[in-house]
Image 1: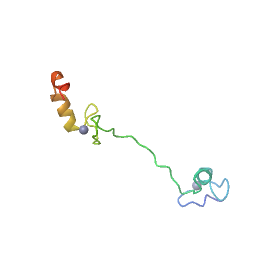
Image 2: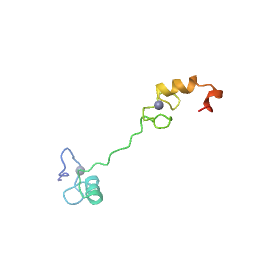
Image 3: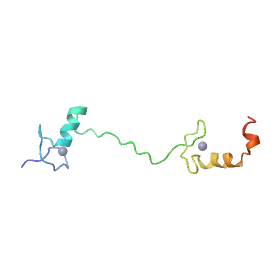
Image 4: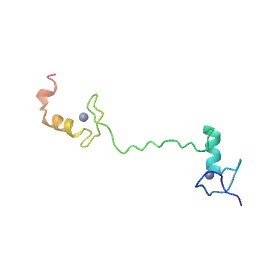
Length: 79
Ligand SMILES: [Zn+2]
Ligand SMILES: [Zn+2]
């Protein structure tokens, strides 16, 4: 039995010399090599406005967690 023509793919051919998975990719993307980037959300961003750092503690980056924790309730509204 012939295998998929894509490199490193050993699955049996389903259509157009491609296995089911790669044939699906060909149909969807027009390119069997196309791999949809997986959005692995391992890290979340800091909750602080305009901060794009990785959240380390309780949704804040290390710097903003320190500020958040250090800020007393009376000071929070006094911006
Ligand atoms: Zn394949
Ligand atoms: Zn931050």
